[in-house]
Image 1 (cartoon, rainbow, N blue to C red):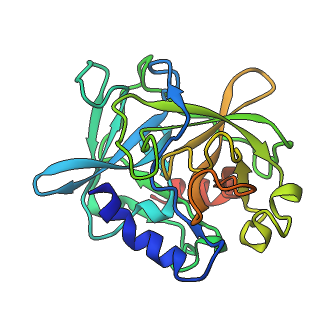
Image 2 (spheres, rainbow, N blue to C red):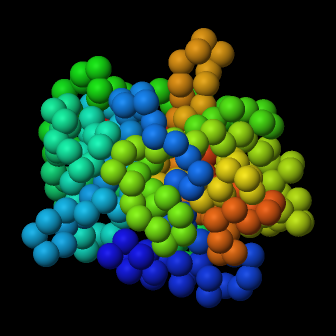
Length: 269
């Protein structure tokens, strides 16, 4: 089901030729089980099919009423819910909060174009139908200051319930993996991502820790100077060559490039 859902996105991305991006088909490869509730802003975005809900993307809680995710995760024809306080999807553990999403409360960036993943703007906001209750397991993410750029090799973590291998099973437990940042100067080299990567994106990881380490829409969690965590990225795409393609790190939408849009969208809705 997961693969069927993503096949259209992958075909769109692949249609434009080799070395083109394809959305990270929601997989964390070579990650490890996260410490339970250590990423308390992580959400599971789920869509309804045949009367039940299915995990499709990650996301980050950025206020008690709003979730940040990827533009390519959203289809206006689907019905969604968001699950917070989730760790092991196979077990009802107690902290989970399941919140329905109303049809008019999906806000994809106006310049997102599903036929041009490399054009950027792969970002969306979801307004929750009711405020979450903040608990030790459900917390709001901090966002970086507008324009903030991470240095090369900054030690960020991706988190998500993505597949454990290409076409493999979805894990029950939230996975995490260390993905060091690859700065724009490196990532935009001709034999890396070249013109495909834009300055409004963040590259992270590499060929050893798999390049598709993560759920689409999910966070790139990076340490701030004071020891807190900030969500610097929204998982956007990996190489159509596959997971751990050499010199094709995972590419994220750079959150610090979209702070104005995030603030305006929340203020206006």
